[in-house]
Picture 1 (cartoon, rainbow, N blue to C red):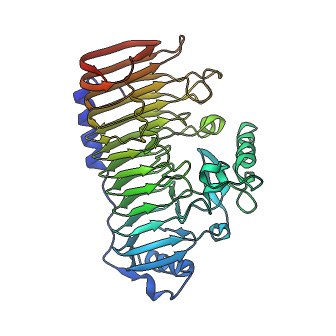
Picture 2: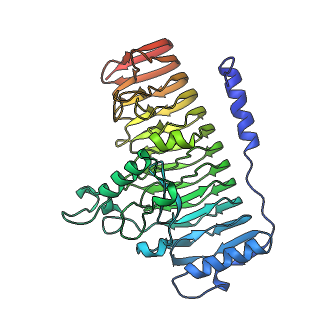
Picture 3: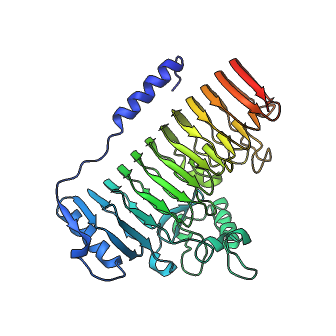
Length: 436
């Protein structure tokens, strides 16, 4: 899809917002405490979700209190409603996330430990309420698997490097996904929330803390609404919300204080991304606070299936530990494409790097044979107080960035000059830049 102009693009964004509706649930309530007592609550969650689903749908109520559990698997027409004062505290025992399920680890398909809240092939599912989902991760549990001392790793302890290398080898060699089995005896961390191949998904109101890895990770889903969620988890690879190979996603009114990208839009990685070939498209992000750590709104690095039609408006980016604003990052190894990205009316208080960074030399650099086209990126109405520079734009000589617009924006207290190389159709108008 090509938009005639920015006005047409934003009309499309408004239409996207209108069509992404939250699922509706019957007024039936299934109180978790009627299905178990004491703890752990794993079987009580399973029974309550099953009863709700079999009755034709409704709400599984989690009343005030703390509920220790293993994996929770949602079924169609079930809303997991976590009331104010309720905490679902997930087990630190990896065995509580077995048997393995069909999932993705860092955008590569495999069978691995279940995400903490998981659904596969379901419709009309939700996690709502003002309560807390606590992943119990930290320097003692889950985070050391990344293999760095900063997150609790100690020399000689097991970590994920060998498993991650083996999974990438399997994908490159075309090993069937059914044979890519990890889980017990392996060290690939599960994500917090993952609906996979689902339709009509709502995550609303809850507070998420201490995740092993990515927090909210819808994969190949359609009609996803993430609304008024707050995420506070500064662990390794703790991205806030990563829609991957999804269609029609709205992320609104959320707070991100996380250990990696606040929002990262993805579409599969490398050979696996090419095999699956499903883009991520039609994503609206609005009225969100991004406070920490890497990209405020990142696109990539997993772009292999292609990413298009991304809209960002009325967000607030900034904090002493937040790096980038709009961060489009990929390379000729990852491939894919990124097109039709529109950003407007963003307040930036402080970033350690650029407000707009589009970098084809990220990560693996220019060492592959699939240079990704990046085109039609339009940024306007930015008011920025303190950054390293306003923008950094780096394409390839044979695959330049195309049609990049930055207009009607102000960038105060900039530390260094902007960088632009191998860009065709760069337009910078109505922009003021003040040195620090």
